[in-house]
Image: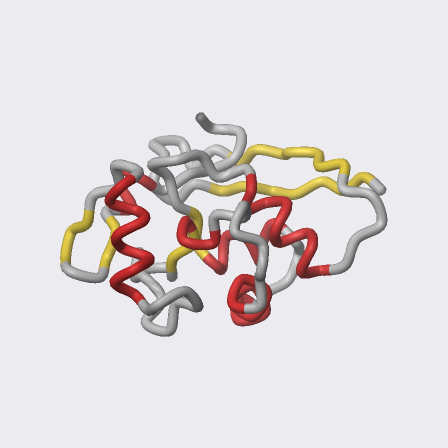
Length: 128
């Protein structure tokens, strides 16, 4: 199965729209979320809404449910934040402080105690 996703950067100077083709086989929604999250590089984050948009849904909470239900430690769920850059208060693996610890270890800076500096660390597939 091949599907095209759109990536829009609200932080880019040109508001560039990129089309990215993913080859994911016959997978369910949660698996599609995991495939996208696996592509987020160290030092970068994506938002729940951004991933939802890439999967052609407006249901960012469903993305959160997928990440909360993940049991594979190889999927970097800690690299997904809310639209303001906020870490998950109910982060599945020992709360928000653990998510922040993992992000800081990868070089992600915060503009406040629980909020990632999105201007520096927001990742848009196809832009970097």
